[in-house]
Length: 366
Image (tube, rainbow, N blue to C red):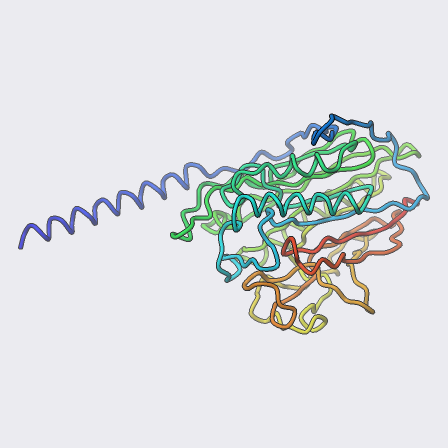
């Protein structure tokens, strides 16, 4: 009788050591990326075939129609058949390396076809298990040559050993900004996150501040961000917005033009469930953006066409089905009142490439 008990106790001890060792690894590996990190603007070149580079324009013009596109590309995994385990779905990684590569290249090609003056791209992986270590930053910059660009890590996570059958693994992802105009300087700013165990799930968060000269001697300050989604503390998202608003307000007071775009992870339409026909009651993250807190001198440009309403995001608990998927608009822009918004809308790709549709805004600097 003693031998089986010894074996069981030995197995339990081994299991405890494995779990303890893994937890020690997770906590010792976790770190926050430094705040106020200076980013080095780069010139993007096409290298598929012959090397080709053109120099971006120096000054952003006034009183001329320009366009900006923001797109959370979902680390290249979210085809319309994809569901994600953290949304209640099935998968933790892209379907295959070839599938992620092809999907990322397709989105890069779609962006090139848009011919926008500015691109704000979120959830761009550069060395992640979930996207088979494909450098998506490189693929996007190759497809959009002749532009000034910056990249900042949003998070660099320890290896997540869940789901056990196919672990999500290590995620290294960030924010990519590309423009037709020269970025003079840029900085990565850290956002508040939870201090408890939830930080291991929602990871680090940041926004980037990109400075471009305008032809009147001021600056266009271009913000790219991806706010938290999986927090257990609902006040964190509001704290993140407060930090962002404080920064933007200071730039506006200095006489600059402000365009802030990205993934708010907040309902920009107030009640997207009612608009798109599927209730969001079961999705606690889908809270309305508190527009009353937007600072004076700024306004929300929520992409929306009431005649043809298109959501910017779907909940990925199941493959895409417009009849059953919860749909919401969480991607958009906040601009200062010296920026005149001409139009803001969602590009309807029916979530063929990402759980987000891209959003576009046309504007002029007054």
